[in-house]
Image 1 (spheres, rainbow, N blue to C red):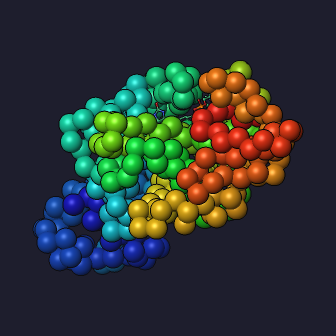
Image 2: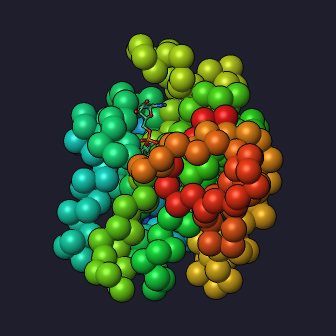
Image 3: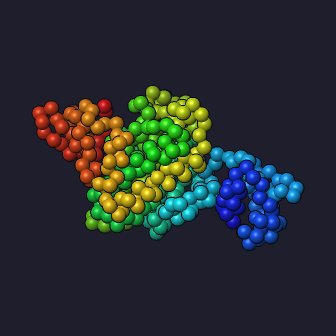
Length: 319
Ligand code: BT5
């Protein structure tokens, strides 16, 4: 009910909408409408009321609430449910738990703060309160296990395009999972899987995106940035998250229908490493050469100085 009410108030941007119309459209009494408006106000929404005119939404808080997102995304994306937590260990951990309890594809887990946010290989992800987007998405695609890393690349494309649409600035992608502004990391992606050797049960895509931090503690201060630092203004988290998920939605549908090859040119258009000299630290060795691109399955291609072409499946990259 609250989501539908918000949706209606938003469609009349800067205009009043009468209590009568709201109660008619929502199928409830005017007293019920008033109660929901009061609840929205308590959450920080500025809903003006004027005699004979009705209600007008003039300001929204920067919270990542379940009904705010549902009201924006329900009709536009494949998101089926939003679970929002003020503070949890890790959205990734909670998503794994929900996935093993059969949560459907499109379940989105969000937190205002993570106390044990994680990166790849047991690294930590700094996730302070209400300054970023800390989220995990449960997917159940019918794809081969080896294709799961392609979803990291797809997510990076959605993040870059979503940021461009919502904030008007252009980050770059560093293979496989970093989104950067001039070498500083604004977002990281973590793709994990619940699978048998030949069957994917669930893929959990985690995204950490720095939004409104104005500074970072050492040692992150030299390597991290935020949308606020890059754009010079504070950014509404719901706006940027909605924009990313709308991009994500059509990229994912394209991926399921046409395969990764259809997403690859979009990835290449934003990739930082293409044609550059890089060092790739894989779990087994350190390789240096020119990153010539990615193949149709998303694997990084590295031309070593002796001319040998190497396929890199997983690594940390320095350029
Ligand atoms: C990543 O790992 O970049 C994946 C990060 C995924 C985080 C999300 S948040 C929501 C979901 N729930 C979770 O628990 N995790 C996911 P990796 O490539 O391993 O990079 C980790 C490294 O990035 C750390 O070792 C730090 O050097 C750096 N780092 C940590 N926090 C950062 C931040 N907020 N901004 C920029 N860099 C950070």
